[in-house]
Length: 104
Image: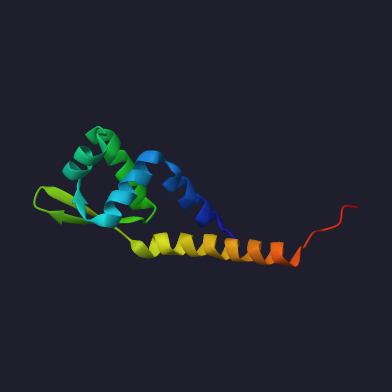
């Protein structure tokens, strides 16, 4: 069963720019400058999206001099992926068993 935390995380990841950021961070740890170059987003807009991802616990930060590096927290993505995998397994079993509630 999905929780409100899951729903909040889905909303966070549903934004196209945030999903792009997460996809980039899955491949490597990047600083804001790299993310601006890769996404073409304005620095302010990108910073706002990174704040949302940070507050949702999707990314961790690592200060490095005057730069901040961002790293994806794979366990967060795995958690939501596991929820969807469970839903798919349940749906498959329901379809195979042809479970259907009768209408009154």
